[in-house]
Length: 214
Ligand code: E4P
Image (cartoon, rainbow, N blue to C red; front, top):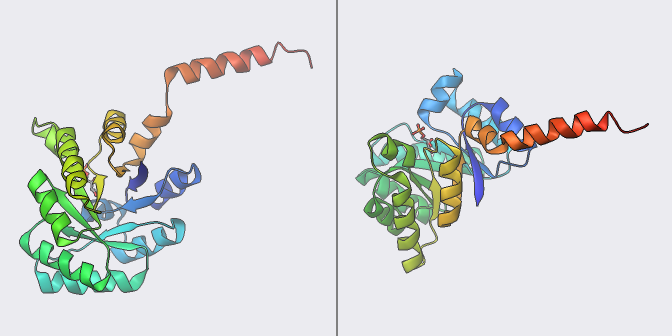
């Protein structure tokens, strides 16, 4: 399973990338707003750090405006994937982008049918938001299972990008279901590394090493 990092914080991206944990990056307007920087500046800097798909989201909601933004992002860097919302004009933009060779990530997916439509429109990636489904007492991971099955049934090439990941169990469950990618916030990546028995075991090794004659 590929790991993307879900952030606009370039320090987090550099740190995770140095551990070999970053195959790509996803951003969204909320994440970029937290940085206090211009969207374009952040995305350009990310493209210099990571050689992989970098999702940059459109800020408009009409077909013509979204296509304008999509073409601008596409011109900026070959690795930029245009993130489009799962609304009728978004699907139209996905279709046109596919015809123009612009890669797309369809965001805000909450149902198997929405994922089916995105694949039919020609999306490169579908982003089901599992954490937000868990938040309303649904089981987000069931959506991943259904989308993986649907895409396998019809051999769609759209990659399943598990989004709104909130904890390590989301990551291991997504991997067991065969999702293509998990986009993971940096604090969750740090949680993946940690295990109390690793810390206890390492402390004992260090303590015992001091008893070894030099
Ligand atoms: C995905 O592309 C989104 O940026 C992100 O995963 C949303 O996560 P959230 O529900 O924690 O905001």
